[in-house]
Length: 322
Image 1 (cartoon, rainbow, N blue to C red):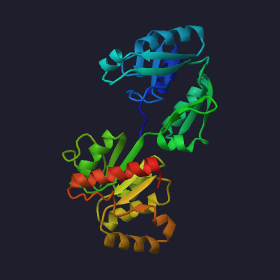
Image 2: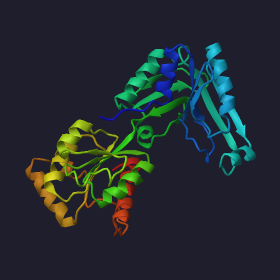
Image 3: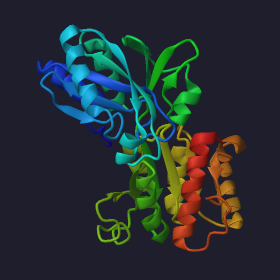
Image 4: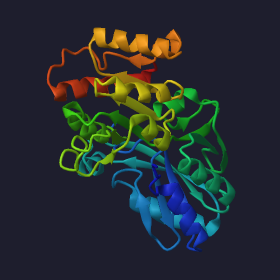
């Protein structure tokens, strides 16, 4: 149902296979206030086209020149730039610093086979790490061994000098119940980097007027979740108060490796929910995965405040663990 938009790896593979030549430039180290995190990428074609960013404007021009040279030579290189306070201020930073960028030409240093595997993994929503020589580039993929990096979306250089670029699937937030809280939660979640999906079989609730431009699935939650294919990069929030809608979604979610499950309702409502799930055969340990009542205890009252508390709890579980 979801589709990975073309990022730097996808474009690099397309440009290389089209005969244009391509190089991937990846941030491997940066100063604290940089607008682009370690792992940010820019792709450069042999004819000078660029997509993506490694610094927000400070060094892109210089990286493009070096990347085109790397495509010609077939050799990877580690670039280091000292950014002055004046240049940093010009792109919105408080101070300058140092940025290191690894440039890898496709086909020689970054092989077509490894890049193709990376693109396939991203399309399949499979979390993978690209492990490279930080000085010269060139590496391989792994899907295990970097649990903290995967959880934190944190690329970086290991103690042994290897650079690890984390490629996680995009985060998704599935909201069951197109209610007032959802109208506040969905745009907040999008700003926080989630791809929200609203599920509600009640057409009047999930209308375009209430959720302009958003993905709304007009189906029963269990069928919708099976179609969406929830995974470890998916959070589920249940907002209907209606067991006919919430419970079928829970039966699917509790059997998956979804990283967060939250359900709206009072403590009494949640206690009844627990009883129903126990009778349905779910273990106490499995049921304990549900955050109910949903949201951090911040004294939220309005729908918008409740949405803030929910998103805060989702991010806490994502970054700090359950």
